[in-house]
Picture (cartoon, rainbow, N blue to C red):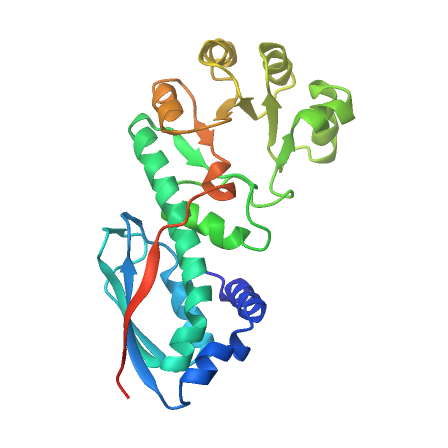
Length: 279
């Protein structure tokens, strides 16, 4: 993990929460007070972000953490993930930032895991998208990997992706692909988003490397897959849930991309409980 990026994220979150001006904790604790507390899973899921969680307290200082679970491990409701011991003030003041990051990362990893489990037997890979929380993309895409998914492009420079408005701006799929090929003749792959069979045909004719079949019904999807017939990598996207994934798993596709892995995922419920003053 890139701790330069992680430290920037954590420090911004600590400043946002005014952790150095916690009027509640500063009023009720003495500077030398020590405590211990448990990190507990309150629902089943895949744990992700333990290094980020511990880094919050490393930055704040004077907390020892004994992890009982490993990164990427499945946890059950009620299981103790870790035991923390150290400054009462730091434990109380850093709790929310540490939990916010851990809960979101674990929620994303859990969602990626659940989706990947449905499709992995059929060789179909689950991808994330760029629909990420501003400033948290590095952590969110890492979480997808931890859950068993794969990363689509990290940013706009990774590859060319021709979407609906690009098609309109360029005057068609063929024009768009040709202009991109002229500027980037061999290094960058080109993906085209298609919403109907006519666009699929144009993308195949333009020799797009990847064709995304977006928001298509089952029958149209099968027709488009049959037409592409190995002439491009096939990605399917649009309103993916468990039922939809079940319908896709026996089709001859390569990838399924899911924006909801990051843009509307439910955080995994994790808490710091049972605090006990020891000094």
